[in-house]
Structure formats: C-alpha cells, structure tokens
Image (cartoon, rainbow, N blue to C red; front, side, top):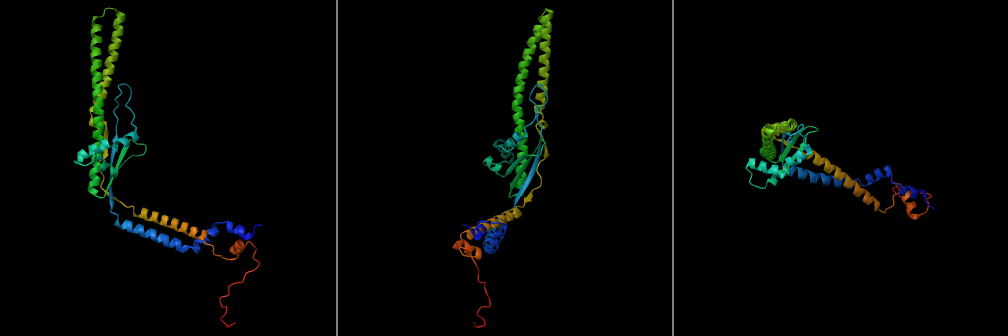
Length: 287
C-alpha cells in the first residue's frame, strides 16, 4: 500500500527543485564564488593577445590545354596555406631559423564565405610579430603556388616540344605527299597539332605571370587585441552554477533528516494523522 507522502516524495518537480536550491543555496553561492575567483585570477595574469589579418584572392590558371580554366577547391587551398610547406616559405621570408612548425601554432586560415578569398589570421602576444608573420604567410603562400605552377609549366614545355617535333614531321610528310586523300588527312593532323600547341603556349604564358596564382587583397591589418575576459568569466559563472546546483542536489539526495509531515509518513510507512505546530513563545509565561 502506497501513501500520498510516498508519491510526493518520489516526484521531484520544478517546485521541489527550487525548494532544494533555496535550502542548499550556500552550496551554489560558495561554489560559484570559488569558480569566479579562480577565473578572475587567471584573467588578471593572462597576457593580452594580438591578431593580424591578411587576405588573398586565389586565381587558378588552368594547365589543361583544352577547355576553360580549372575551378579551385578552396578547402584544399586553405589546407595548403596552413601546411608546413607554406610555413617553411614564411620562415625563409622572416629569416626565422627555428622549426617552421612553430609558426603554425598561432595561424588560422579560412575561406571567406562562398568566395575565392583566403583569410589568414595570426595571433601572438607581440603585436608587431603577429603582423609580420601573417604578412610572411600571405607572401609565402603565393610563392608556394608560383613554384607549384612553375613546376607544372615545365611539363607543358615538354609537351609543346614533343608536339612541335610531331608537327614538323607531319608537315614534311605533307610537303612530299602526292595523293590528295593522304594530303587532306595530313593537313587535318597538322591543323590539330598547331591548335593544341597554341593552347598549350597560352596556358604556359599564364603560369609565368605572378598575378595568375593570386592577388593580395590585404597584406596585414593593424594588430588588434583579442579580449576573451568576458567569455572566460561567463564560462566560469556557468560552470560554478552548474557545479553548485549539482552539489546541492547531491547533498539533498543523501540527507536523511525529516522535514515535515510527508517525510515522516514516508519513513514510518504509516499515515500521519496530526502534527503539533511549533509554538515560538512556548514556556515564556512560566507554564
């Protein structure tokens, strides 16, 4: 047989939750105060961090001899811009003799929306260093792309040389051919080779242009302070309130003291017929 007190004790609704927090408010207050105190101490000792921003418009001259310029995978370009290879280029520009990977620690590279613009952000406690390093990464990324396309342009030159040899041989055969049908076939082959060579030359010239791989939209912005104090304190407040509430509920769960008629009915397993109210003035008149 279940009593009304049992049902009310087992059900823990919003009212019971608020009553528990009221009874155990010191758990919440003390825990939150300690957490905020630690956060204030951390913020007070934290050195300011500066960030500088650079932007590059990525251009992609196609190395495909036939068809329009190739599209650019911006996610791949962002990964390349933050890679060790570009960090090595930036280290060379800065004259940094340490490990290039050390420069990657404060770097973030992202794609600006749906555009073909890469945004470089570098954070450092020294404002001038933040600006110098982000500028070096912008220049290093463009230099890396130029070298990459320059390597690929060498293969285009080899293709052009091969096609020119084949075109010369075809033209020699055309000059000595007497059969009209053979001459037509050789002429069509010669025209196709000449067109392919012209397209290859155009792509090759594009790869030699410095502006073909990208344009600097912003070299390096003036350093600005990153203020994270408010976020840190808000996080500390949330953590303190959460821990304090958890401790209050934990203490309430394992507290076996009786608080009123319902607790007595639950523990005694019998209904409570009546209670004696507390009389504050009891015994003052000498009775």
